Amino acid sequence: MTDLFAAARALVEPSKGLLAADESTPTAAKRLAAYGIASSPELRRQFRDLFLSMEGVERYLSGVILYEETFAQKGSDGKLFPDSLEARGIAPGIKVDEGTEPFPGSAEELITKGLVGLPERLAAFKKGGAVFTKWRAVIRIEGDALPTAAAVLENAKRLASYAKEAQVAGLVPIVEPEVLLAGKHSRARSQAVIQETLATLFSALAAQGVDLGGLLLKTAMARSGDASAHKDASEEVAAATLEALVASVPREVAGIVFLSGGESPDEATANLAAITREARRVEAPWPLTFSYARALQEEALALWKGKAENVEAARAAFRARLEKVQAALVSSP
Image 1 (cartoon, rainbow, N blue to C red):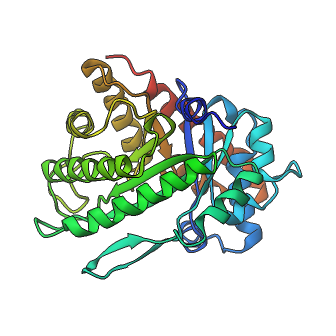
Image 2: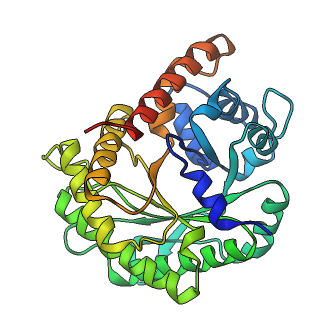
């Protein structure tokens, strides 16, 4: 029987974090197209392999969130990616939601689907070597009108149902209610929405009887919207983020991982360092780390361009960013 508490804690071990390599096929295609790379199953496999097969990556990563396509593909070592990761002490994870659909009660909001057939899919991924799972909901801010309480509640209920099913299957759930960066909202508004969303989520998790000691929270940082005229200092982001978390996240949660949500690599690294310092100052009760996608991959993709002769340079850039993000986790005051 899986020790969910031990598995969850291993994912937030000191100085390591998660690579979110779970972009859906359309999202991966857009990501590659931005660097002039065509999308095909083989090029997406090479895209994943660029990062997952880098020598020494286990020094920086405790886990990798995979997409279903990648879960069934092989790396340059000839092994299935989950097997290759496990052999290097990196926990394989899997995104199990099936994207979003319009919320009937509010045309401008989305709810996440994927509960139909979820137990069977979880069992298959568990058999294939998965240790943990992830489900993402998206929460949009628009003035005081969005998000609506009804959309937040529906997403929270679905996150809680997923988390319960994952634990029944012996898999650690990561719940990700992402408050989006897009918009003109203030940092204070972002903080309030994160706090309200998390309070609703943890009420739903309690109603489902989810064991918080075997669960991780993936959350956005509290920041002004990307269309706001205000540019937040990292210290401002850290203070607002920790205030929201301390007010809404039970201390029993095994750990909290941060998404970068469209931030540049340097912004994501600087904000993580400031959050680490602030968490130490306020004596936050949970281990904290990163679960970044673009912020870890962007510099390497710009160099790779889908060409074999650029792999070494791209991996050097990836390693350099991992070293910077790792240093942010042990940032001194």
